[in-house]
Image (tube, one colour):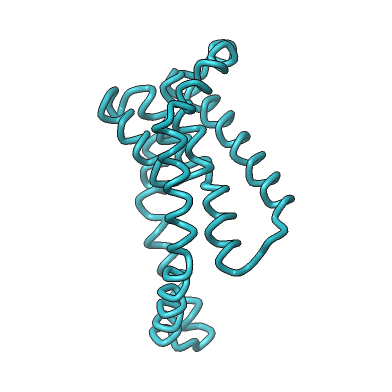
Length: 177
């Protein structure tokens, strides 16, 4: 099973790129010019999200450095034991919906502390890939295009993050536990 996943993982991006290029050639789209136009739009988007990104990063650092994250983990620790969730991955689960950079830093810390091939490293990897930066997406991308009413998107995004966290813990225990 791991060999099949490794083959799929190795070939998925080249096949996707080849599919996009083939579809563009089939439909006679000027591929290079379309790519350049998209890249220009991406640059404008990057400039417009910088203020939102700075605000989000400051909020994450305040949450982590104030000790609020450690206090929250202490409060929910009985639930973690009951559901067999290692406390070491809770910062990743809590930070992932907020910040991709913050959750990557937590995952890197888990890799450094326990190794990427350890159970915690594999669980962190699955969790990182199974969830999204919901609050980051809502703040930065919705803010950059002026969407103000995102109540339902927030609820659905956070629910999908919870499902991703539960599923990643279940899969990690089933495959590596």
